[in-house]
Every structure is written in structure tokens, then in C-alpha cells.
Length: 167
Image (tube, rainbow, N blue to C red; front, side, top):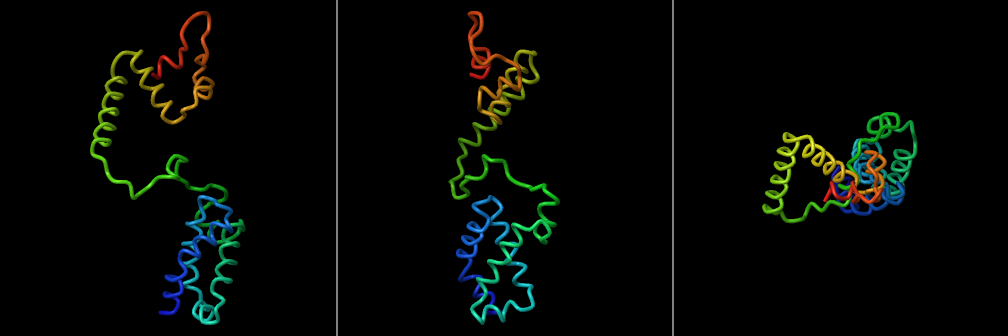
């Protein structure tokens, strides 16, 4: 078992990279790599394959079958017949090594508090707070215009309704 652990430790970065290539850069590639490594550890011939220098070949096959097959264990456990649990698109490029900023945290809390106060206030303030929250999720004015039926462009001499309510 020690050689198997050493193999996985020494080749971890290569296994994850191989998974990214096989999964064609999918956001699931790292999950697939970890799933396959845990399955490989439990495989009855894992140590034999590592000692015969065929571990990476075997892992590449496991990654390919796990990701591309709709009958694989990975697909059955994690995708649940087409449903993939994933992070919001904005979280993909998140940097965990960023330093924590108490100022940013305090500002975020203050903004949340102001929005909550606005929602509890008049109907106009509730409308503006709701529209601002929608803008945070979808920052495309055209899409917001489609969702809310508020004209995106100026009409009959009035200012841009969508722009003036969000700024």
C-alpha cells in the first residue's frame, strides 16, 4: 500500500491535469480525478498496476469511463441522471488564497442592511432594492429588460428607466 500512496502523491498534479484534458476542461474534472483516485485505492489490482508502471494508463481509462459514460459509478452517484450539482458561474475563478478584508466584509454587510431597510420601506424603495438584487445576479441590462418588461432604452423623452433605477 505504501507504493500506491507514494504513486498517488508523486503523480497527483499529473492525474488532475490528465483529468482536465480527458474531461475537456469541464468544471467537473477535478471531482472526477478525486473520485477515480479513491476508486483506484480500493481496486484489488492497484498495487500490482503501480508496480508494473501501468497505473497512469489504468487511471486514464477510469477517468474516461467515469466522465463520458452515463452508466459509470461517478455518473450514478454525482450526476443523478443528468443533474449536476455545481457552483454558480461567478465562483469558478474564485481565489481561496486572497487575503481576508474586514473592510470589504463590513461594506457587504452594510449594503445588505441598506437593502433590507429599503425592502421594508415604501413600494418604490422595495422595487429599487429588488431590481438591484436582480442586477447583482444578472448584470446585463438587456436581459433585465426582458425579465422585468422595463424598457432598456429611452422612450418618449423619459430617461432610461432601467438605468436610473439601478444606479
